Picture 1 (cartoon, rainbow, N blue to C red):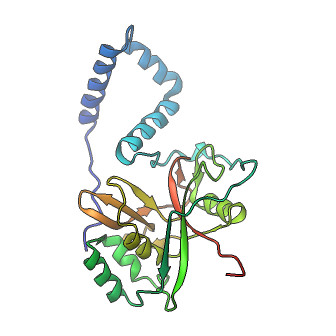
Picture 2 (picture 1 turned 90 degrees about the horizontal axis):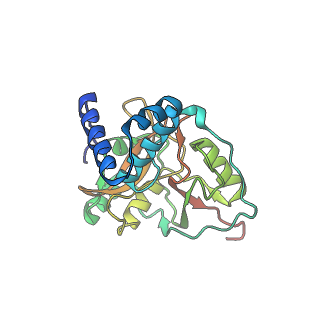
Picture 3 (picture 1 turned 90 degrees about the vertical axis):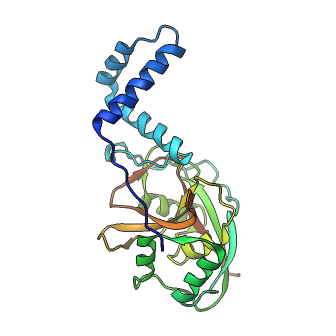
Length: 246
């Protein structure tokens, strides 16, 4: 199993050097650009500029607004006038892999990786592999598609999806089946599961996320402390709720 991932720490001096390069570039391409005005704007709108910076970094790394925002920015969902049925992201069948050994063998066969924390979460009692096969549809939806125009919590997102969009939260085993079924995932894309978190060995609550990085296709995790908030453009994976007749 591969390592979950590494967090790179940069010094303030390195950030200052990078910011200086950005300012110099702006001065070259924007007529009349005055660096002093940036300082004035920072004094008046520091928190807003912080969010812009976070959003810009998120877009550069993940192609979407995946970096969380300060808690005071939370907003209630604004329901769309007429919720529409979201398209199916992936259809598959669960219950195929009945043991962790079978899961690991399937990951090896398909050339997918399981991160360290993801592997630990699979050993948690709340990670249950279905013993009977059934067809499942998964839906990809952003906070904005579910009516959030500002930042929101994962709990609020799931409540809204289940109440108004005929969606259900993912079960932990869905991470396995989505990863093994989504083999054409674009490089650089990450998709978290809208699920109840599991406590990993670092005593932090985590959820599964499927991604494609330099190491290939992987099942990793995201840290989700209580109250953590997310940008409206961040895309999550849900189960489509089955009708009573199906």
